[in-house]
Image 1 (cartoon, one colour):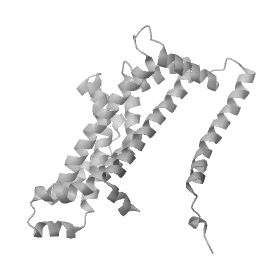
Image 2 (tube, helix red, strand yellow):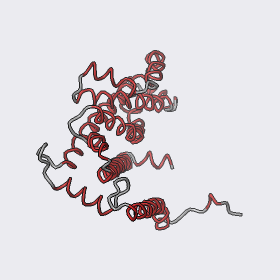
Image 3 (cartoon, helix red, strand yellow):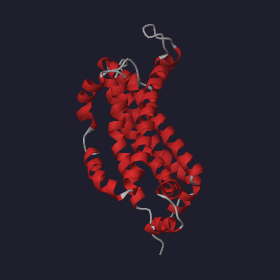
Image 4 (tube, one colour):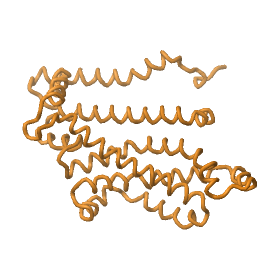
Length: 272
């Protein structure tokens, strides 16, 4: 007797099934929006899709008088610049510290508890401290992102290093490999796919810290714009910006997934 877990949808059916929740959410919004607009045509809480489109076209194609910028693209550039810089620094720290601390027993015994405790500190709780130490400029925003996700990436890489079979390390030493050769030849190739996955899993948190920092102090950015217009109940700006952020995060996640599949296909085969 076949169980339900043995029924696997075909690619076309899988695409349809994946689309259903999005279609359902859109249908629910349209019904609720139409009901509200029928009662109050000037309703701001649930604008029509036409209003969303008109607002986004205006922000993407009309030069803002105050900033002399096209707001949608300017905000996107600022947020992505902060995000990429924070993610890049975090990934580099995660790779270097995760491998070194995870591979050398004395360092692992010394620093593993520290990184475990450090990763449990709520990053938003220390945001005022970061502003005091680094000011209200770009540095504090980047430090917040690094503070928030680097400890997670470091711990994840350390766990991957510690999970490498001891037999591989013993064989490398038997063949005369030095510590550096073992790191570059045995550890690094196995850690890189995990590092990419760790960055993927950190995207949501990284966006959260970007939005939080921009909401408190910034002169532009997607989070800055959302919190700027909230006082006017401008849902025709807020909701499209939220969707735009989600789309950017999805594209980044997809790009990282494709990068891992192209650069390390053997890791996907092993996982399967």
